[in-house]
Image 1 (cartoon, rainbow, N blue to C red):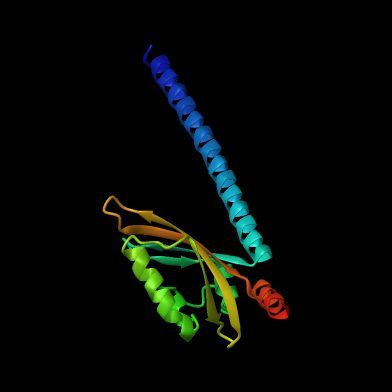
Image 2 (tube, rainbow, N blue to C red):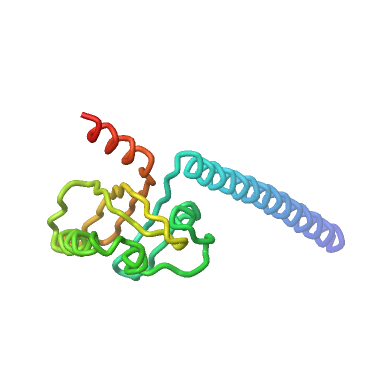
Length: 171
């Protein structure tokens, strides 16, 4: 009677808990596999950037958050994560003769006038070495046309630039 009902209820509850534990274990294993796969993707991305000599950045105008890839820091001769970048940080590395042009570019982006998607700019690395960078970006705009997010890449093209200049001068 009552004992059988209680035993049956206890067995049923035990099976329910065992099933829940198995589901939780399966979900945990899936979460770990997803995290491992995500980590692998991030490592591959970082490796590809290093091989290509390309860094990337992201700016969110709503939060003001700026993110630089490790390779972006390295291109500037800085230890990755040495400081938290701001929307103005890169301008400190821009060659003084190119700063006005960069400021106009930023004004154009903010005003909805984006002249092209790539620019070439001179920078002075932390160690004082001048380099030529190609900047390319994609601007995500809100309904009002104002930039919401910018995702961009930075490539050190110094060797290509010098080769191109030497060819021009040899003609």
